[in-house]
Each structure stands twice: as C-alpha cells, then as structure tokens.
Length: 152
Image (cartoon, rainbow, N blue to C red; front, side, top):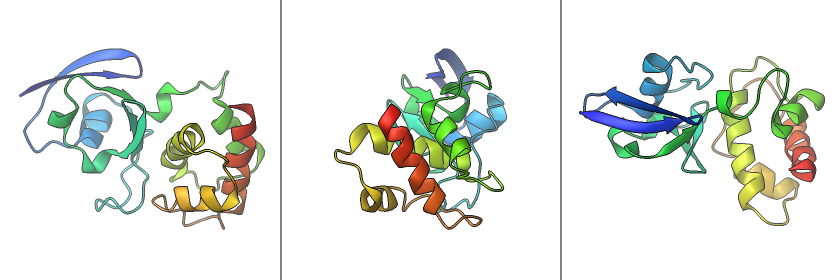
C-alpha cells in the first residue's frame, strides 16, 4: 500500500506492507536514524516522535495509520548551528550520558512543555514516565525540561 506523509516538513510517498511500523519507515526508508529502537515492546520511549503535534512511540504506530499525517523527528526540531531550546537545555544541564534515550526524551519533553500547565518537577517526572534512561538519575533531565520550559 502507498502511504503519504510529511516528515520534518517534507512530503514522502512510500510503499509499505500493512504491518510496517512507523519507526521502520523513518529509520529504514527515510534514513532518519535519530529515532531509536530500544526495546521493541513500547516500554522505553527511545522511538518517540511527534505525530500531528503530539508525542507518540513510533514503534506502536503502523505506517498505514499515518497516511496524510505530519511527523516530526529529532532531526526536524533543530540543527547543530541552531539547537531547539530543549536540545540546548539538555546540553547545558548535562542531561544526557550515552545519548541513546535522548532523542525520544527530548521529543516527549517538548510535548510535555507545550501541553501541561504549571509544569513543576513532579509533573515532569510523571510526564516522562514512558521514557527510560539507564545512564542518568533523571535529576538533570528534569532540570533541563524545566529550564527549557522557561524559554519555550
């Protein structure tokens, strides 16, 4: 089947099998490898992207479900010369170590900042429960999200 979707502002028409996952289209077909596959069970959040403006785990979405949709990946939110405020906050607050979870964590955090009122430490921790990090203690991640929220 043919699926048309807009990824990071560019339209793509791709042929997919009915059981093809969005994460596989992003990584394998479009070469957007910033979206990571960490667990294959939708538990870790490393594959989080924005689908029509809301964060989703792309390993739980069939490509056929996104026909006509807009997808934003980590590659679509900033550049090395012009980081998104959340990317800059993660850097400035030392909120990453190995970096494997970071793209999904950042995409979830942006959604959190844009959609949760009166954001505080508790709300950030609860909002990021679906994103796992094996390297940090989450303290600097929470700090980064709250810092970025001020500039977003």
